[in-house]
Structure formats: structure tokens, C-alpha cells
Length: 149
Length: 250
Image 1 (spheres, rainbow over the protein chains, first blue to last red):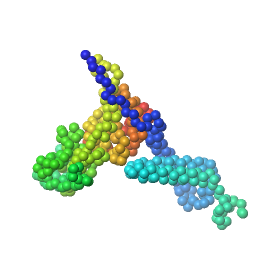
Image 2 (cartoon, each protein chain N blue to C red):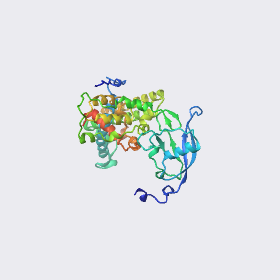
Image 3 (cartoon, each protein chain N blue to C red):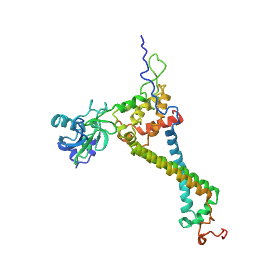
Image 4 (cartoon, each protein chain N blue to C red):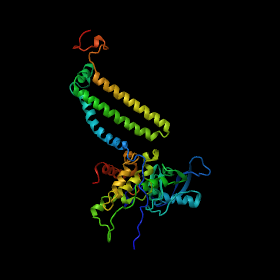
């Protein structure tokens, strides 16, 4: 004698069914970008602060020299994007934890998003449009190879 | 054996009784707007547990004190509460392990609706437990029994220890603020079946936990592993479920 037992309940349908699970990709992004950022940031710190003359070497000419090579342009832009998104996503988690009021939460998350986008856009713009001979630089601080106006 | 290594100077190590101040966070929904702390002086022995102190208060001083307990021996999972700021079972916390020179603070577990004194509404906790389908799902019907090797059994041994006391879930900061998160206990019980070689619905459970409010909300704070009175490596179990979602079961 056997009794057929019905399935005790239907599988739960959560809201995000069928949509892209951003929390999952956010979690993976935090891990992947974290590993990359360790290399990028410590490489950046070593080149800027330790190698050669160390911290004394840093001046306008040093930065101009770095941004003259595509290698450091790419390095800095990748670092900027990864770090800004990584940091903002971490801040988003903290806001979600502490801001229980929906309006406050939306305002904080919006401000966070705007700040991240503005900083990423401005930073990228600076790296790729950097002009060591800009006319905005005072004549006494201009680099030696720049044409004298 | 254990008593020999303990600090002899602590009054809690002597066999004579001592008076302890118990600070209990009381809440009577019919009278109180907010929970309030009430102190009780209780005569106890070092071998007494926090549960014994609560019993003494209820039986000898104030019969209105409300708390849950069933087996009183650390198996039923009824008396999880916040003792000196940590989630523990009242029946497994001995007086000799607490600093009795200061008051002992006892309050209900956090993150679940407070009903009265130390009693909370466990329904949200059990709702997310039910959602992960914590029962064996197998299509075939064996003649005698479902065979499993010792290694296959060992794979999920740790998560079989759960007694559903909610100490882990109610210690989780994500659970406190996000009412939708499954919580560690539900994930532990999903883990118990996901890694069970006899079960066939692990992909269904992984799908359920691969949710916006699923395992990805865990931030490895380790509060749950610290709170578990059964010593389950809860954070590790959650990490294994994350790995199973990403790379498949191993």
C-alpha cells in the first residue's frame, strides 16, 4: 500500500525571477576588482613614491611625463574606474544597511551615483586630454620643452 | 578537568552561592510603549546557567517574566537570546563563564518582531527557512534505503547540526536592516540538502538563493559563525553555496 504525497508547496517565485541578478554580478565584481586593485594601487604607489628619487620626484613634470605614455594613461584610467565603482558599490551596501527610510535611501544612493559618475568622467577626461603645455600654466612654471608663447 | 584550569580568584569558581544582578529587557505590549530594563538580584551557583537564573526570577520573584524554553539542554533551540550583547542559548551559558561582578544583560534576539519580554515572533525566520525547501527531494523510490558513502555524508555533516534557534540569523547585520534577506539559518539548511548526494533539487535551491536578496547579500561579517551554539561554520557554508552557484557543486 502506497500513498502518493503531494509536493508540500509550490516553488517560491521571487520578484527578480528571469531578470539579470545584479547583486550576483556586483558580488563577483567586488572580488575581481579587489584583486586587480591590489596590483594597480601598489604598482602606482611603488612607481610614484619608492622608485628612483622616491617621493621627491613628484612634481608637475613627473605627472606630465607619466601621462605622455599610453601605458600610464591606461593604468590610471583602469585604476580610476575600478576603484570608483568598487568604492561606490561598497558605499551603496552601507547606505542600504543604515538608511531605513526609503526617501533618505533614494537620495543617498542618487548622490552616490552622481558623485561616482562625475568623478569617473572628469578623471577620464583629465587623463586623456592632459596637455603639459597648456596655456593656463604660468610662464615661470612651464616645462622646458614647451613652445614659448 | 576544566575547572582546574580556571582562574581561582573568580567568585564564580567557588562552590558557594553568590548574588548576581540580572538586567532583563522587559516589554509588555499591553502597557509599554518601549522595552525597558529591569534588574533582579538572584542567588546562584557557578554551575547554574542563565536559564536557571531566569527560572528563579520567574518562579520566585516575578511570574510575569516571559521567555521560551523547551528541552533546556541545548537541543530544541527555543531559548536563543542576547546575553551580554552576544547571541547565545540561555541553557548553554554557565554563570562561571560570565563576569558576575557586573550585571548580566539579557534581552530578546534582534531583527524579529518583539512580542513580549524575551519572546519574538519567529515567523519571518521560519518563512525564509521554508522558502529554501528544506526537505529531501528524490524522484526514485528505493527498495530498502537510499545509500550514501561516508564521504558523501561528511560533505554536509556540519550543516545537519542546525537546531533552528535563530541565533545566527538574528545576529546578522544584513538581516537586521533588510527584511527580505534569507538569513544565515535558511542558507545553512539549504546547504544541508544542496550537498546531499541523495537529493535531486539542488539546482532549484541554488536558483532560489541566487536571488537579489539571496546569498549575495552576505558580506562575511562572521557574526553568524560566532553566534552559532552548535559550532556550525555558517559563513563557510554560505561561501560554499556562493561557489556552487558560480562554478557548480563540488
